[in-house]
Image (cartoon, rainbow, N blue to C red; front, top):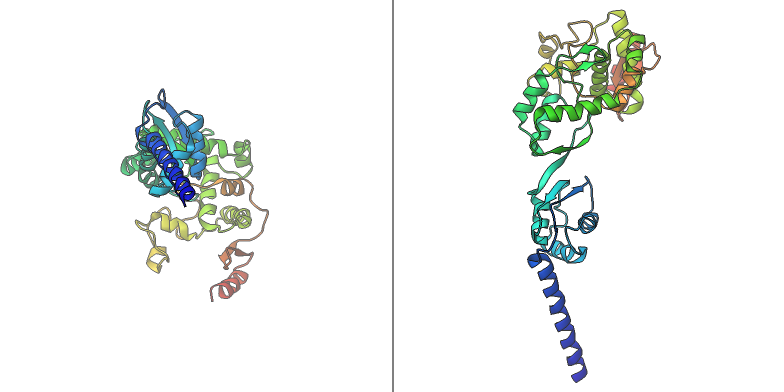
Length: 328
């Protein structure tokens, strides 16, 4: 029993020593970083990978103490991605707090989904803490872009959907430049030649890509939907795309009414032939590729038929039969 008591006592002393070391390392030691240090936490990073980066950059001495304290406090899942700048001589507790609250963030990761409008992008940026939604939306709506010699009406359609590391406090113009650069990089290298071959300007092809983005559910349908749009344009047929009317409405509606179909708007492709005045969304890479390389098809109609896919028809009678089958 005496031996057991000695062992237990040693164990308690050891645990107290470890606890004291962890407490000192996390809450009292201010030896690191020795200078202001920037660390990027990629989106989707595990907590262990964040601790490894902090250790490698000299922000913390060793990952274990902070790992243990974060798990005890339930903070290991609360670290947010971004770019952080840590001032010299901070406790590891302050480092962790900065990662959880983004108090030391100098840039934040923002994901822009395919098909977002400029207004939605502005709101997403604001929700991520990198701008004012109203100011961003105003800037996007009033800025034009030269795209292969053609000036756009706004930036609608020309802000590429992607994940960006956006500096906190960046001006709307700086954010525009970041998203525009990605858009230009996403265009096919022969975009001007492809547009000429399609008897379009590059912005017009981007407008078609935005229609494809809003209409298609799966990638294999994108070139076919683009082909239908080009076929109808060449024949002078109204596009009759519901998404263009939805774009003109003040609020999203899950289903359009007969009154909506009669909306007096240049975006109403039931009433007006040709393309809408601008893109109706910001298309992703797959939709841009489809618009610049449409499928060779004779189809003039399509209808959604479940499981993510559309069915296509060359004649109105065939289309009506597809509608009856798919929408019953």
